[in-house]
Length: 537
Image (cartoon, rainbow, N blue to C red; front, side, top):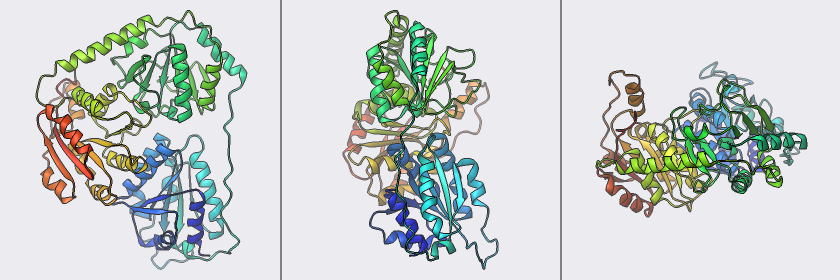
């Protein structure tokens, strides 16, 4: 058996269905082995970054490790940003890179850098396969490491002479063992119970790492059984249905946000699923309210995060244990918190009614998207100022229905997110919102989306500038300088990629156009005239 065949059989043993890749000669043996596989489908992307991003997002949706394949030096370095994205977002993904022969090479050091050393700081593990006989154990261990807490990227380098060598037939893929997470002991639960019962107005703050199905079930039950208020970070917006009465909005800013006045009335915060890589709110620092850290792993202590108690291991089990306990909480009083929350809701509605201009503003965009999209439809956001507005004003009704990044805060990546979302959820509408600057950065994989026959609506917010930096520039009282740009002819651009294009100048036409695109097949691009007139206020 050829080593590359054994490599593919080992991937099949891990239930890998897709490999996202960009080709080069060092991977030809592996490519031929994949061609002969009945279980793995190869997805050709136009850039290594897209390959990693799509594989990582499969990990986000499924919790399973997916695969991105590229080759040596320049192709491997192109993967780095998206590997960092997977690291900060805790997404399991296996990176495979090719390499020149390691036993004997006729090309000296041409195109060779130490890719394994480059990957080590941003992956959980990075290794070169130096013998075909080691493939089964190295792949099994790579998947195991990638999916253990905290999940993120792992890397294997497969030199072309190792891929082409022959191994004995008795080498075979390894069995996959089941691992159960440990649970919290009764004493810790009792300490948590006593702290909750001593509190007068506890609240729950839910972060990105709580995005698990079982957590949604038990967290929702705990919230509703105890009528306890909760709010969320930007990256969390999909764990609990935000229509329930206990929802206090989303913390999108670190100071002077809508919900901060309400949170100041609390004397205890249950912080569920937080890691300091996610942008913090200003209320959980050393001098803030007492905070209880509930997560799969220990807290990283920082000036912005200093918990009073850490309750570590399986979050869903911790919440289940809390739902099984009868809390003495008749003295809990949330009247001030809920009163402030109702006032905030009215303020948002009033501000929306004040937007009388014809051009689309962020609040109106949030409102229109929410009215058109179904509960289970998916909204993928690129990273810019509109992300903050939508995080605050667009309520999520179901898990994984609004996707954004507030850890690495990656630009021009959400077409890849939208493509992964649509491949996994073919029956759901998928809408991607991006800026005009970032669309041009991300053009190459419009062809990939078309080739994969994906139905995606892309909303391009057209204001011919880097709006968020303008906001920061204005906030700092600097002059308006060098942040405007020109755009290509978007209609001709769309036609060159076989996409449909719609131009919306008056905001009253947006919902009608959006509904039309959702009923159509293929890639549809809406050029939406857009502005940020109220950022500072």
